[in-house]
Image 1 (cartoon, each protein chain N blue to C red):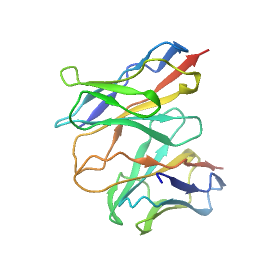
Image 2 (cartoon, chains in turn brown, red):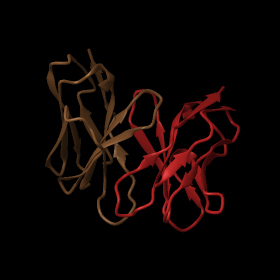
Image 3 (tube, one colour):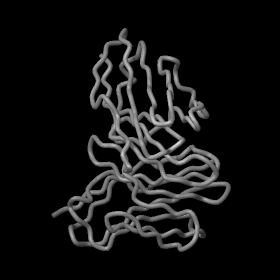
Image 4 (cartoon, each protein chain N blue to C red):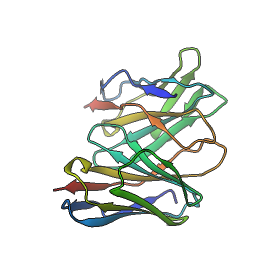
Length: 114
Length: 114
C-alpha cells in the first residue's frame, strides 16, 4: 500500500475560522511533510517531521501550526488565514534516515480562504 | 545550494511519437534525482529516481530517464507518447542523503496531441 490520504478534499474558510487538515499513511514511513502549491507552480516545502519531531520549518507564518500525533498521522492547524493562503496543500511521506528515498504524496486539500 | 531547472514550460508532442522532458540540476555533492507527474487537481506521483548505478533509469508507465553527469542533466523520456501522459512534470533533486529537503524544478506541462 503506497497511499497517503488527506482530508478534507476541499475546504472553504473565513479569515477568522480555525480548521485542521489531516494526513494519514500506513507505509511505516517515519518522515512526513507539508507542502503548499499554487496553481501551475512547484510544491513549496512548509514543514518536515522526522520520527515525529519537527525537523524543518521553512519560515512559515504562525497561523499555520503542524502537529504529528503519531508516526501515521500529520495535522496542519489553520487559524486566521489570509486570502493569499488559498492553495493546494499536499502531504507527503517517505522513509527517514541516511538514504535518498522518494516521497509519496497525498491527493491534497484544496483550500480557499474568503 | 541545490537547484533544478526545467528549460521548457510546455512540450507538445503527437501521440505515438517519442517524448523528452528536460531537466538540469546543480548540487554541491552527489545528486539524487527524481521525476514526478501531477495530473489536474491531484497530488504528485513518483515516476523514477536516480541514486547511483546505471545512467539509464526505468520507471513507471514506460518512462525512463538518462542521467548525464558531465552535462548535469536528467532528461525524462518515453519511446511512444500517449494522450493520457498529458500532465505537469516535475524534476526534483536532493544532494544530501541525510536531508529531507527536496528542491523541485518549476515544472513542464506536457501535451500529447491525438
